Image (cartoon, rainbow over all chains, first blue to last red; front, top):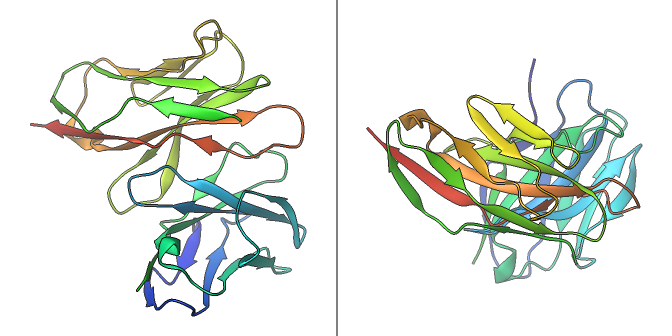
Length: 113
Length: 114
């Protein structure tokens, strides 16, 4: 049973560029959440998708957007990249209301130069 | 706002030593509390949880008790192993209202030496 898979694992971008990160949830899961983890910090909630809609959003600017597809997979898009966007981006999946039981992927390490 | 404060690391212990990682929280409601672990090169994994005051979560020899009076959820293990080396995160989730998102502490790096 595959867990949460994320791609790419590492990428380097320059300021002003745009990036798309992808996530496939654990089999049977229908809810996807995205977190940003800066170096040496705990994950910060970006947003959550359920039934192809953004259900909750953390304190992140509109440059951060997402999408969920009918197969429950999800994308995170970040526009107009800033140096401060350099971080590990974690995808977590869960089943409906069992929000606290998150299963995390290994993350996508984004470096902005 | 809601927040979690963790004991600053890094923490270095010898194998079979006793481990305590302190965690305190601030929340307006009645949160559920969690410990997550991140092994090198892996994603976060749920280690244990407690959903109400005086509950004790336990897993893999680790324990934590939800103490409402001291707003704490300290992680303990009686005898650590080299394989316990990882980063440990305390987190809270409010059990009511619309703020159903995990709030994490900053993490505590644990290194266990043979």
